[in-house]
Length: 531
Ligand code: ADP
Ligand code: MG
Image (cartoon, rainbow, N blue to C red; front, top):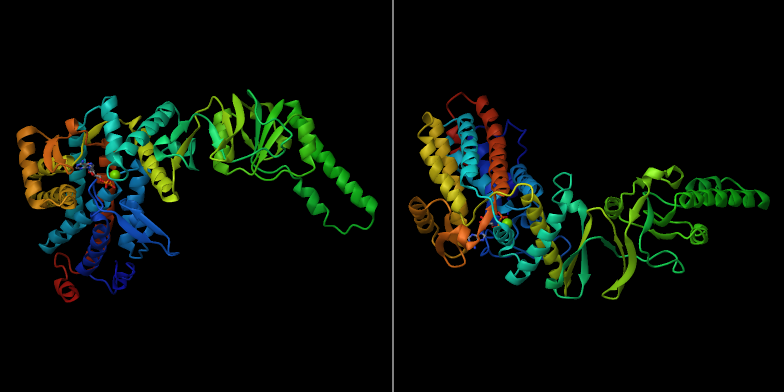
């Protein structure tokens, strides 16, 4: 995809002078954008990717394509980083952000060709983003419940079939509602909701469990498998007495010494169990191992124990029950223990699972599917749906999809540019043109003529307002609110900001290089030879 001759170290300014650096970087960006352009929208085509180990992924998700591709060009990597940031912040709009970045760069290159300095272009682009964001605020609307579902369904459009998209949307909203009052960062929804893929059952039987379900059985089958609630302690470590094992490596000469060691070890373990009993602990979850000797002690103390947890699951358990994750039982105090409402072991598709319910907002998404590929797909769709649903619960304004937003902004910016001075006008126009890559790619992927469609759409908007967009399923321009084709404002905002930032950071490199050649006279010859 990206040829190795593009692999130039950008620090090497001796070799790359003037325009050729920009040409090089723009080419890399366009090559990468070309790889994902055909996946945009519900009628985007799937890409089949073959990984290094021969594994096959079929996807029409732009960011998956990019992350799987092995790319080495620094500009290409910057674009990938931009789409990953988009994924992290907005969980959607990754393809859009890559297409926008590449198009902003393409137009910047054109502008430098007619002698416009990169710093002017950067200025014009910054003005454009600012103006766009303020305009987006004006055309966005607050959705009702039905419209909220519509946004999430639009996110899933083309990724999974419609019936399944309905179900995934439903459970994503259910989980997001539960989290809406919680405090936490961008990743809260990843931390709080465990994804458990279950073989068997149809994908549409996927569900949210308000509690934790873990593929686990208790350490000692003679302890009770269920309870109607009690006190829990969580140990982010082991219950093994590692210190003593180290001591034991000292040369041991008499059996008496050995027996002494053993006694002391048992004594330490007994103290730990006593500490648990004192605090009324009845359920113990330990990240690492539990020494064999402790098993009968725990049983005697009426404690049911589980071991070998993923750290993330322990974090969820801690949120669910209010128990603190402590490093060692010796330091367990009253404040550290937690409470759960009930626990049981149940069989899901023939495999034993532990289920714990509690007051805290931690959940499990049981994602079903008959084949591993199906489960993988359901899981990815759920990730997107929950990511968007959760963010919408905090920032719920929505915009028209189907290229409407970008078409409107392009027209708005062209009018806005005339209010600006001189050469920046051209940069703002360049920005406006770049936005239209979205309606163009959407039409192309639907087998429609991109030029005709973009013109027709803009004309329709002049007549009937910014909410008119292209429904690629029917090929008609219609009101996107009525058609239920909508995108969250935060997705569009992040795409605009992220793409502009990335484009500017590449132009800045060029700016520095340009400063090295004679001011105002770009080195044309060099570039022509390169072309
Ligand atoms: P991204 O990675 O950028 O989210 P997608 O492949 O998910 O890329 O496509 C998102 C785009 O598809 C958005 O601009 C959205 O408005 C548009 N879209 C979704 N459904 C439709 C539809 N039925 N008609 C036209 N555009 C649509
Ligand atoms: Mg999307």
